Amino acid sequence: MSDCVFCMIARGEIPARVVYSDDLVIAFDDIAPQAPVHTLVVPKQHYDRLGADVPSEVICALFAAVPKVAAAKGVAESGYRVIVNNGPDAMQTVGHLHVHVIGGRRMTHGMVHFE
Image 1 (cartoon, rainbow, N blue to C red):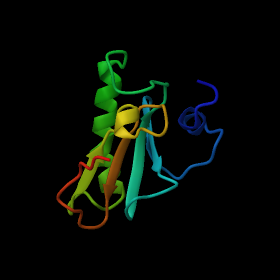
Image 2: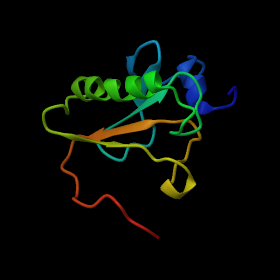
Image 3: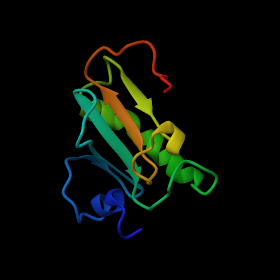
């Protein structure tokens, strides 16, 4: 998708602080972090959200990158949260599948809040 911000980052058209990259995914720091560590892992190919159209090798690559990102960001031992916001009710703000790796401080127990 030519106008997708995450696609543009994956193609190198928009600068980002890249933490990890391989053939299928790229990880970069979020521009509006919710914690000291807030890195996004995204497929290099565009998929709107997690669903049946996403090949299993892409899903595997996304989640295989998570511990590598956590290690690179120094939170592998202390712990981190992994979140996928999937669709509008989950508040997915960018229509490109992505995984949030969040850490660097102790988090609250609850993670589900409804309006």
